[in-house]
Image 1 (tube, one colour):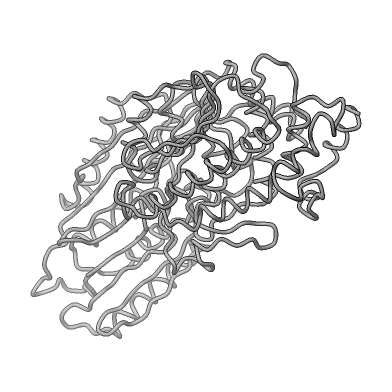
Image 2 (cartoon, helix red, strand yellow):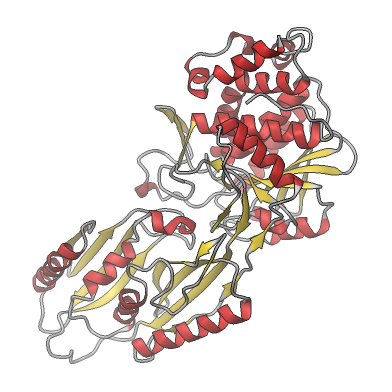
Length: 542
């Protein structure tokens, strides 16, 4: 029986599992779990029965729970957890779910962390997620971001990949183990922080004051096992916009009166706009003609240039379009701000702060993902090169500012990198004749590296290699920063598979149902191996 069960599990591909609901999954949890009991599946080990149950029945539950969580608009940058009614409502929903399934639940801080617990004793395994999400500007989406839908094998909605789908996978994996009567050898925790996209202080306090699990797995990046993370850097450049000149310099066509790009620091802007007003002696028609000519002149050197200009009353608006992606994968998108600065550089603009900052973008950022033009470039063998992305450009209170997000690898200590930033700021100042300077709030995070030879990494790598049939897969590194960095030796395990596009911060965020399915199965195997039978050599089916 055991051999036949293993063969059946190996032959059942995720796509086949999605095609038709397994009849064994009908009914309430107790009834369906009975169909995977040791009586029903004689000769199968607990690990094999658990794997069979999850593979047959988990996906529908995961999708439904993900949809429930996505409907809560938990945008932390708009309202912090302590004051966000949507976060509070999600907490009540999670508490009700936990009670329904026989798990413990508690809130730590002012809705900073929600914790679902299973088992007794000291924490043995912690699965870490975040329940907050980044904004979802409606004009960038083709679907309603907080009304999740399944279309053509993918689940769409803000948070389905980052991080509410993974939360659902973890919760359902635990619920199904409990359905079968399995018990952990220590306490298993689902730890959900609610400020990952904005303010980490709540989770930082949790990580430093609460008992730490023996093993901590964050499910917030990719596979196979992400054992290292780049340090997060926030850097700001700014300039006073200045007042319009009474007598413009000869040849000047327009004055930049407003500029906008990006929605938040951790997303490469998909759209950038520049508003121009004619200077004395010029007309809107002349400005529009000049902008169209600049677009035409720039187009041959930029095959992906998407730009248009139009009149808005007495002004002209130049808009460029790129591809918005998470800033940790900036080199997989297309920064609309690069194109805006390049077209602006071809215009005869009055020399105010907006024009000066756009010239800096054109000279020091355009086409350069790795900080070479700023004098910052370096790289590490495991973690790769420094990544630099200008992401947010705004005018406010008479000043124009540029937010820059960087992801720095190990290989250069904080003192050396700070010195390099100082030198870069000096170069920018010289480029702009002193107009552009570094703003306040420089933040420099340290890289995080786990023990790649330790039992946690070895266990998870074994699961991935078997489930994906990739025996040569090795641990990797991410440029993003997840809650894993707050816990010693913690790693990330999913949800994105190699070579799959990551849509976590992008418009129309989505995740393949097959990815959710396989991620849940691998997470379940990790729970069994690390917490339910940590001393056993039994392996779940591939």
